[in-house]
Length: 513
Image 1: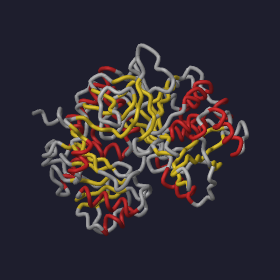
Image 2 (image 1 turned 120 degrees about the vertical axis):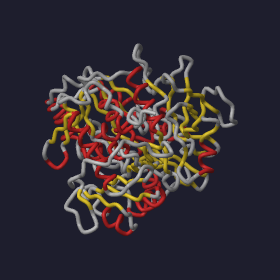
Image 3 (image 1 turned 135 degrees about the horizontal axis):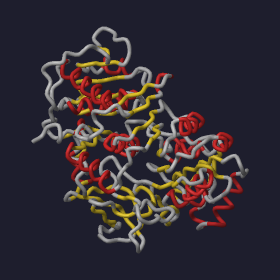
Image 4 (image 1 turned 120 degrees about the horizontal axis):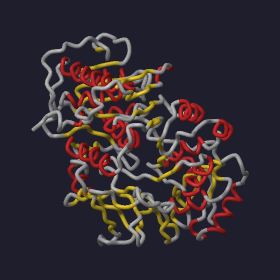
């Protein structure tokens, strides 16, 4: 076995650009631009690996990463793997009890924390008695500074004994977060397959404003860019005006994220009109419902830019892709990707359905859910991952996302997916963003309720929006309550926080209509 070749931490080390002075990362965190070349990034990853091993960590140990958007995240993530460790990337914005659960559940014996991203992280790691503690700041007693001098001896590349590269945690929208075990072999297959079938040009420049711990950033930008020799810009956080300015200043060619950030972007029409976005070629939207109307608006406001709807999941990679040689129908995530098996399974368990839960089988499907053997058995059947996402497929093999299996609810005997109501509302000229949730109803059981953000170009009242839904969709699916908001509440992963919205609607008086 070639340890380097088989280790995700070295995934771009055998590429021609790995030892070059070409720019890999432009980091805008900390209020000052920092640039890392490929040679410099490789050296920093190696230094991080040596630091972790010098502190007594051994292959297979889990290391919590509680870091913000900065180049040190990339160094730590891949550097830990070079040392044979298993990084556990965590959302620094998660509440303390959730972070504590994930650190304990993963059995982390090390941690790297960024106090700017999570002021409570250091005290949390102290309280949990994590043995090896590294901080991106002045180090208090018992802590090691991230930039500590490192001995250059006694280090050899390694793999974790169980073959796990890293362990992500799901958002926990339907209960406690679940640890997703992802292998070196599967992740390397995904990177190499992506570059083979959907190659990225080394001249590409990406812009990242979404959280780096999320798959949207790592699978969509970081890994393909570094493997191809391209470069990307890291923003510490999303701000629509800063984002637009960075698109223009750095001649960015592509960017991606959740629909909510693009909804905010579209409100800055003055800056869009004055900016030079001539280098921009593509926006990729995913990780939440994407309305066809939003894609239409983005392509109209940014002439010449292709906007695509992407689909992927932590546990199973990107099983659907837009073909390179023909256009993808509006509203579709694409066709089955090369190397991925996919099928739709209906509510009765029958394969080959035209509408049903998407199942996928491929080399990057998770090894299983950490400490959850029953969940693993339920979710992975003969190598097939049950995604929990409902799609329909047309005669040409294009897949259309309908919603989550656990989002569907019954309203007076009629099954409703929030996406179908959201799509109706998105077609109203006043609507910029929307999230529909199910709320209890004294007669119907559950009914749709909608949180709506107006786009600022056209006005509308809740009653007008209700009437629009009744005129343009089935009566049973119209939202019984509409709440106008300045912005949708978002989870740490940038998705609409449906649980919080359900609580807000539960406090509202509901009619029996």
